[in-house]
Amino acid sequence: MDDELAAEARRRGMPKAALIRLLLRDGVAGPCGNDPLDAVIGRGDGHPVDDIDAAIYVR
Image (cartoon, rainbow, N blue to C red; front, side, top):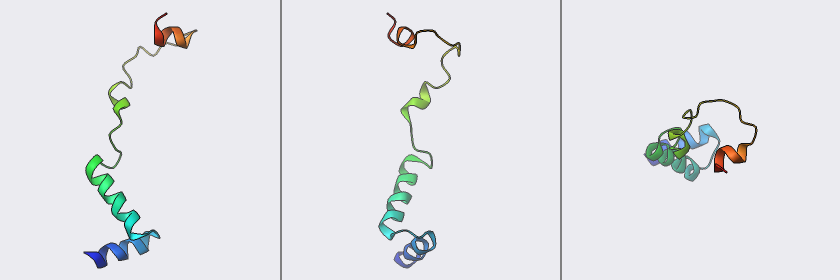
């Protein structure tokens, strides 16, 4: 496995340690990661507002 990692790192032009970190990150979080904002994207009505602070902080 070490030889395969070294060969892949050379192919990608990166240190083997960086490749291992990349593979671990993708294996644990998935290729795109888990962004907590994904749960709220698209939940609004999509209408523009005149005062963004009022819309967000409900003054």
